[in-house]
Image (cartoon, rainbow, N blue to C red):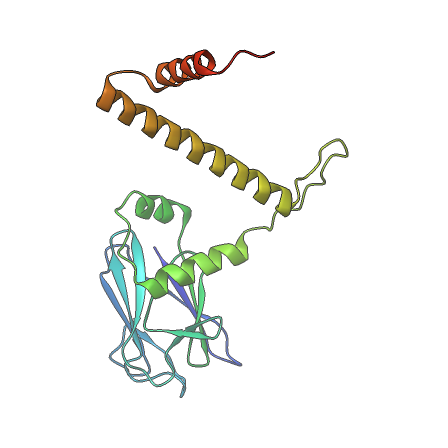
Length: 199
C-alpha cells in the first residue's frame, strides 16, 4: 500500500496508507479530507493526490501556500517513491513498496506537464552521481578548437569543390553527350597541336 508521511514542525511524523486502487486522496486542514493536517500553513482544501496511469500526481487546489519542491512552487507534480514536498510548512513524503513500483512501471506513463518533466529531471540530475573526469593518457593529443575549426572549413570547401565539379560534369554530359574529362583532354590536345613548335 502506498504510504504518505506528513510531518508538521515540532510533532511526530504521521504515516497514512491507502490502496493502489484509490483514485483520489484529498489533503487539507478541513476534517472532511482523507488526510487531515493540523497546521495553519495548510489550506482547508489544500491538494489532491490523483492515481494516474504510470503512478500518482499531486495537484494544488489553489491553496494559499501551495505545493513546493526544493522551494519552487508547482500547480501539479508527478510523485515517485522517495519524493519529499512541502505543503505550506508541512513536509509531505511519498513512499512506494518495491512491488508497487513494479506494478506502476508496467503501466502506461502519465502525461506530464512541462513543470513535472522539469521537476523530475532536475531531481534525477541531483540524485545521479556526477561522473569523475578521466585523465587523458599522455600519448593522446587533444585537438585545439582552432585546429578543429580549420579542419572543418577545409573539409567543407573540399566537399563544395567536389560537388561543383560533379554538377558541371553532369550538365556538360547532358548538353553535349560527352564526358567533361574527355572534353578537357581533347581541348588540351588541340591546344598542343595548335601551339608553334619549340625551337
